[in-house]
Amino acid sequence: MNLFNFIKTNVYKYSQRLKHSKWFVLDLETRRKLTKRSIKSINKCNSWLVIRRILRNCKRLIIEITKYWYIVIAVMGISIIIILLGLYFNVYTSWRRGLWDLRTFLMSSIVIVIFNNVIKSEADRHKKLIVQHSKYTNFIYEETKFINSLLSIFGFYCNIDPLLSSNRHNLFINSIDALKIGLSYSALTTPPNYIEIPEYYTREIYIKFLCKNNIEIIKNTKKYFEEKLLVNVSETTFLLGKCDEAIEKCNEILYTVDILDEGVFECIMLDWITSLSSISFLICAVMRRPWRAEKDYKIKREIDAILSTQKFTYEIFGDVNREISNRGFQYRIERLSMKRGVIKEMSNTISYDEEIVFRNFLASYFHNRYKLVIFFEGFEEYENTFSIDLFWYYSLIHDNKIEIGP
Image (cartoon, rainbow, N blue to C red; front, side, top):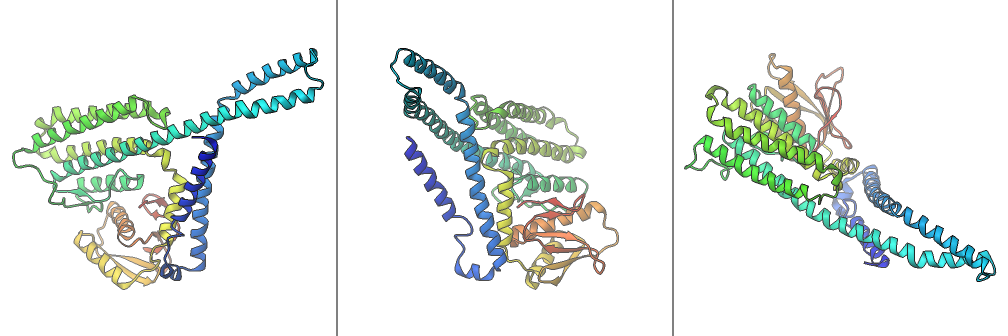
């Protein structure tokens, strides 16, 4: 790939990114529903996303070019010596003529060679990135299936893909903790029909079967890490350590699942599931880091929030209250306005932990079902109010504003 094709390819890529961004695919009806301020915010977000991507690419190119500084200095030193010799032997009538020849040499040889190497390096990085993304999607699919298969033994299923983001994983961990102490949980449902224990397996044998399969999956992923094919190769050591930790945890389950007392079986298994999901989440987080810049992710969530319906309706509150009742929460929500609601406690014995679980559920349900982003607040006339937030995902968990992702 020469320099011209490299520039042409990147210009086309960025033009396609602009063309297919959320701002440009809005239909006329959706644009009419948005305010001028919302349209301006979407336009600003899309522009910032493209600018940040260009700046990251430029930074990467500059870092790659600086690797060849010693070659440039060596060539410059030799060229200066040659020019001085040319002046001494009257080959050059003026030192200006020598510098002009040096300029031609640098442009025709050194710069072209360096840029070709940089372009080749970027092409290789792109190929590695495609392979890494494929390995990442396969790993996250297999680990999520493994977690849900273990949960299905106890009649549960995680419906939020806990390895996709830190907020989803935290919500999953909170739901497991709530389950262990008998509280309501927001990220767990009954498993679908296609996830069930085969009739010819006992519970312990099925757990061993799942763990052995998972060990093979982790070993294959570890082999990929050992070949140092990651784009972010500097984090290979960390990933190898986490793979060994996951294998060790699975072996621990294999050796001890048969001797667990029935009274503590579920609690210990849930602890193992929590540990394995945490290890898998850290591996996934490192693998997706090259293409998932945190600031870009926040900007995209801003766009999602702006494009939401941006208002509460009585129908939404009716549906949410039915879901709250079905899940056994001792709460009810009431609509105060198009952008504000209030939480009503139906019991005087609700604990702080139950309140945390419920607020996690409410924020997650509004976003996943209705694309409405809410944050919790308090006013004098109402103690437990929540409002639509067009820009940030907040949940009142331990302090006022802790981000909760999609």
